[in-house]
Length: 297
Ligand code: SAM
Image (cartoon, rainbow, N blue to C red):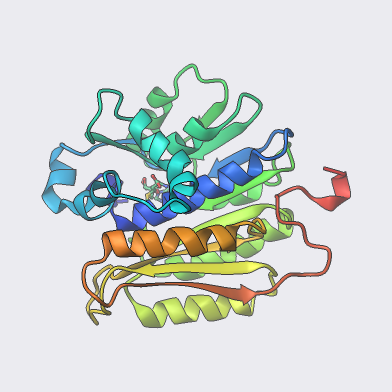
């Protein structure tokens, strides 16, 4: 486990991932009923953008560094407000010194009845995450293998909510693990919302991943992509992807506003592009808020 998210925190991929994540959490808040977010690869939760790791790559400058002061359109402003509010909350003295990871963004958006399970396998990272949420009864941090947790922790007792699966992609076979992990989790909890992050780097692998999802038999799969540059043909992160299973009915419409704005703000060259594609359509009687019909939620 060599991957350190500190080198990449706040980059364009984090921005898209966290903007989508925030919209999913905001949607779940539309009903009073409590929900749970399960973050299977949570990281350390808070990243120092002035530390050596972030400074070495400078990746955040092309992501949150551009977005934080950008002028957004009237439709995009409210849709990005929750996410940007979480970023500002991590910087109480103003400016942009720290970047919140997925568990900190989710935690910022939770109401008092909602819960977060944050899972991280790396012992030091898990210890930092535990320290960050020390004494917070709404957050449970566990040092565990996120793939195993997909079996053991689903469905959550709230029977409403969202699972974020954001693996490091440091080993081969991660795309296959994602498809298998999703299939296993979906079998246990078919009505949950699932958000799976993936890199757009190896386009052959991405095409195989999409095909595997289409063939999985899982319904309601929205594929969200944003490329910041023309395909480089090199093993370089050209774009970012997010698979959302059981997306709220509002998500596609919202992303048609958000993605063009993010794409224009974070573009590296004129090959930047965004796309929304349904890999699988609606199944009969499917619901999209993580509330299964069978338990009357
Ligand atoms: N979700 C975080 C965010 O958006 O702020 C970033 C997560 S980072 C891409 C991936 C994390 O997964 C790393 O912190 C890594 O230590 C952790 N990790 C790697 N293998 C894991 C596993 N099998 N189970 C849980 N965590 C794992």
